[in-house]
Amino acid sequence: MTATPEGPPKLGTTLFSLTLEMRRPDYSLERMIRRVAELDLGPGLEIVGFQSIRDWPRLSDRFVADFRALLDECELVPTAMSMNLDLALRRDRRLTEEEALSYLEAQMEAAHALGFAIGKSAILSTRSFVEGLARIAERLEMRFGVEVHSPESVDSPHVLELRELFEAVDCPLLGFVPDFSASMRSIPPMLVEAHRASGMPPALIELVSEVWESDSSMPEKFARFAEESERLGATPGERGKLNMVLTMHGRMDPRRWEELLPRVVHVHGKFYGIDERGEEPSIDYPTIVDVLVRGGYSGFISSEWEGHAYTDAVSGWEMCRLHHDLLQRLIVEAQERLVRAR
Amino acid sequence: MGPLDKDVVRDDALSATAEGYALEIHSHWYRALPLTSLAVVELELDGERIDPAELVVEANGKRFRFEELAERYDEWWFTTDPVTLHIPAADPRRGEHHVELELGLRIPYLLIGGPDGEPLLASSHTDKTLVCA
Image (tube, each protein chain N blue to C red):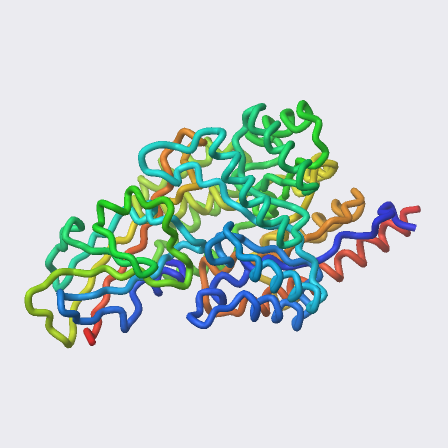
């Protein structure tokens, strides 16, 4: 007996993890997808449309037919299509709300044609935009999720606003995509290493780590870091890079994802590195997986390795394989704990 | 500092043409961007600044003046494609040249401080000596 009649969370991979592998001159989407299957990194497959598909979201009939046949052959399931809302597409003005909705609608239609069940993007937090999005999701019978990525958290002002809007519009197809960058236990060791290697003064790295670990709000952290880093003689470039450390890695208690679970449509298994014991040193995966299994989440977790932003010394494929091993082990352990607790 | 920055100007990026020099650049952003994103091209060739207004930018087989890019939100720079900067020069020399490039990409979906904010300007700096083919 488990608390999840539909089963535990299912695994998958986002091709975003293979950002560097996709930059090779001989890149082909087909080869990437075949490799996901060969390495058993499915069954879920997530793609960033604007990253992996030329001319996205304009797709030829031939592309759509080939894509669907390939996924069938590889026994992969298209999970989430990661889309973008390019509000500043034009230089002269921002997209209007109507244009912004059309921009996402075209991407939802393309994702639907390829067989994806979920679209994911940032959105405008107005009632009329969310209503328009609900109409698109209902028409295409797709779900739609807004990513909750650091510096956002389950109760940051923007996410609270969206939670209220989703309730008000009362469309069960709309929800969130937790990204574990928001609930980390430390700055990734590989990121610290990358900064050291690039010549960042050790005193500044120590300072940003100390500020990161302090129990204060984001604005307070930025203010303290600005003040103390200036005293240490940081250049604007150094300050900018280390500000990104504070922005991109949140310190929310991972148990707090629980309150978002009823609205979770997909999950980003963000990670930066797997150590020799098979653990993610900067993210408390045992607790996170426990929250998901206990809470009955039966959707997909896409392995999302972001270490490629800092190093090309390791293979994204190998990292995703290690991450799958970690998730598989933790899901089994969490299920066993659940059974024992009864 | 990221791996994609190393690849903005590859070792074989510079060539001599009938009009001057051609410098192939690759994007340091992970996804395709509209040409409106190609906002800052501060280029020095052998210590001499190239006025962006003199550049002809070739993308997807089409040629644009640098200022024209501001209106080309319908044309996309795909992740694996180079964009070629055509630099006018009367007498292009083969052999070693020093290239310094500040490439600034205006990221159309990352608006600082919310939907009314300015787009993030993601910069990448290159300082390299290349052999011109």
